[in-house]
Each structure stands twice: as structure tokens, then as C-alpha cells.
Image (cartoon, rainbow, N blue to C red; front, side, top):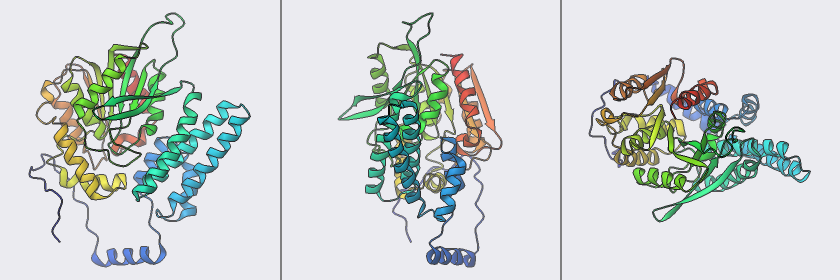
Amino acid sequence: MKSFLPESRHPSRFLRPRRPAGSLGKTMIGNLYEAITGRRPVPASFVRRAVANGLDKAHLDDAIKRARSIHRLPDYLLARARQKHDKGIYWDELGLKPRARDHYLESALWGLYAEILTRDPESKHEIYRQYSHSYLCAAPHFTVPAMPVQTGFIASTLHGYLRLPQPSPEAPDQKAPCIILLNGLCSPKEELHYVENALVAKGFATLSMDYPGQAGSLPPSPFDVAEFGNSLCLFLSTRPEIDISRLALYGISLGGRIALYLALTFPERFKSVVSISAPYDLNGDLDHMTPALARELLLPTMSVRTALLELAHQTPIEDRLGNLTTPVLIAGGGKDLITLSEETRYIFEQVASADKKLVLCPGANHNLYEMMPSIRYELAQWMQQRV
């Protein structure tokens, strides 16, 4: 059958490992078993991602065991999300804000990963509305509160959270440096909570924004990446608590590529860049990355391919990294099949900065989830020394 998806016309510069092909008989038996029993295993990448970003592994394993299939798992996760939210309301009404906060945050996490597993767009929007509300309820009661903020972007509005560190007793009026956080292309701002914790512990303010047109884990609308970055900087310039001369970027996966592009586009604005598992050659690797990311993100292939094509067009970093002189830390995983370790090393070698660091974790997959949470604080410390 002929594909109606655009084809990649650029050969990849990286040698991609081929996935071993299963026999036709095993594939047919596997499909038949799934059709009869309704059982399909939950991808290990999903479990790594959920645990790294705050879900309790024992509780998640229990939910997976009870559901027995990825198709039924969202219902179990949503049930736990509603239960935790109701308990949050209970403790909130009693005036026990810290306990309410913990239940609201856990509710948001259960809902977030239920939404990621859900395929129907209308259902995804409704689940996103629910878990973003739970996070909003928790946000004022964090040790370092998260303030909901918004800013204009062309003909739309961007929504996100700004977190400000506790002022120093020695300098209570001192403005704070700020890190702009850029998550994967199909990841919501609420998933960045524990990265924010690591950064605010080092004295940074953090700004986390959904991409234009994004709702939950659905791909965002096509957008001008340079204008997006400019809008975030203009917003921060209006905040009297922020030292606009001390900004930095922290990007994960496709957000890591966006971070590199913004640093190239606005070389005077950012003091340092951390880029984790950033893909380099989207055009050349389109045919490889589309199915790999579709499996990772649990999204339709067409949606992922369209998003990658648009991002490749909006973030032309290929053959431009030699112009990047901002201090930069490039990180990746040795077992990453989406962004190969060779690709991570190539980006590092191409960057012209005299102050650059390469972090390759041999046992880690995409986004280094296996290394969380310790690596968050290592990266935060590196940024603290340069912002």
C-alpha cells in the first residue's frame, strides 16, 4: 500500500540499528491473541517515563497488573486520579494544605499518564482538563509555589507556570535568574514539575509553558519557534522578580533541539543551554524517528510525522552548530534508539563553545529517565555555575 506521508529525501548521516523482524507466524499469533484476550503489554518506556516524573512504581505496577492490558489501563489510572483528587478536596476543606497538595499533585500525575495512553482526541482533552485542574489546585501550596501565568503569542495565548525561589535573607530584593524549560513536543508543562524542583533548589526561577495550540500530550499546532522563544523572553522582561540578563534554556528530546535553535537565534540572551536527547538530523532521520517516536509517545504515526516535519522546518540547526558559542551541556543515553549516542556526540563535537560538556549515560534510554532524579540536580548545579 502506498503511503500518503511525505517521504524523507535526505539520507541519514548516522548508522541506525535495524530492529529484528519477527516471523509472520509469531506476528499473526500475537495479533490473534491480543484480539481474543484484549491483552497488550504496557511499553517499558511508558513505565520509565511515569516513574521518573513522579508516579510511585509499586502503585503503577499494581494498576498495570490489575488492568492486564494497555487498553484497560487508562480507566484504572483515572479511577486513582479521581480518588486522589477527592481526598485532596477533603484535606483542603480541613485546612491541611500540605496534605491536600500531595493528593492533588498525585491526582494530576495519575491523570496525566491516563491521558497519554488514551487515543481518542476528545477524551484526551477532557482528561487534560481534569488533571491540569488538579495541578492548579496543588500549585499554590508547593514549597516553592507555581504561579499560573499567560502571555500573548501572535493570535493566541500561551499558558504556563512561573516559580520563584525563596529570597535570600542577605539580599531580599535581589532578582532571580530564570530557566526556560522546554519539554518534548507531546509533553505537557505539568510533567516538568520535578525538574523545576531541582532548579528552584539551586536558586533559579523557572518558566514552563505549553507549546502553542498544545493540550496535554497531543501534538501542538504548527508554530514559529523563534517567535515562541521571543514571546517567552518578552514576558520575563515584564516580571520585576526576574533578572532578564541571566536567562538559560533546559530542553528535553525535541525540546532539546528547540533549546539549541533558540540559543543560535538569540546568542546574547542566554547564559547557558542544557540539551538532553536532542535529535540532530530530522530530515535525514524522518523515516526512522517517526515510528520510534510514535511507539515512545503512544501517538498515531501521521501526527508524529507531521509534527517532526514542521519542527525540522522551524528549527534548522543542521550545519549551524559551529556558530553556537554559548556554554552548553549535551546529554544522551547509550541505549537510546531515537537519538543515538553517536548523534549526541556529533552535536557536542559540532558546537563551537569553549565551555561545553558531554554527558553520556551508557545504561540509559531516551530522555535519561533511568538516571532521574539524581541527574536533574547534577545538571542544575552545572547551570548554577554559569548563570
